[in-house]
Image (cartoon, rainbow, N blue to C red; front, top):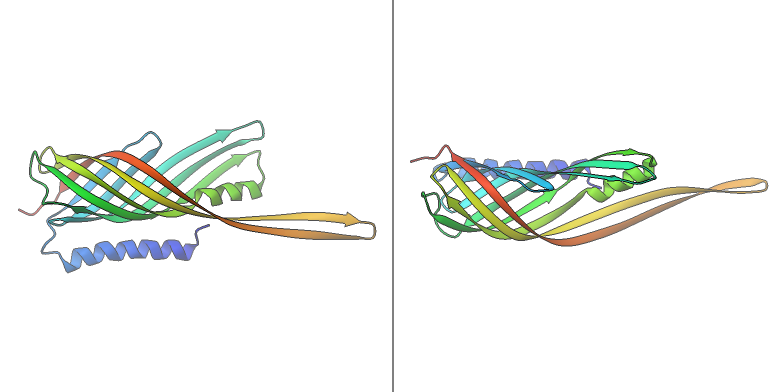
Length: 208
């Protein structure tokens, strides 16, 4: 489960990253970019600052999942803020050119769960499973249709780390007395997944 302090520090770090980039190198900054990465399950958008070879960004992904069984129905919305940067291997932005890049980001998830027919403990367990943090690395390229619009493709690897706390209580009764056993289990999960996305990007506020 992600703590509020962890989330606040993450948001602060991302704000300082873009703030420092904007104030410390404003003379070199040549524009801004907004992009979307549509997918079958994950919908993503981002905002970044443009420098001659570097593009720091912040963004958010959204995932909607649902499952049903004879025991109940569960649906969840997962929001995944992420902070990172693209490093272009050459100067970019000229019309009808291809610009390859390397990219990396750090992300975490916030989950909202609606459940019918399941206990509150099971609902909390599902929420815990859907809240994680991770790192991503990848490479890609953008093709500039014009100085303002580009389309891109990206392939990479994401490492996800998940920590789950499970709590339960068991009442045991015997003649003349009763007792309650509290069971607390904590376990961690790690996943490595590859991804491939396409993007549409709008570049604006460019300095001539």
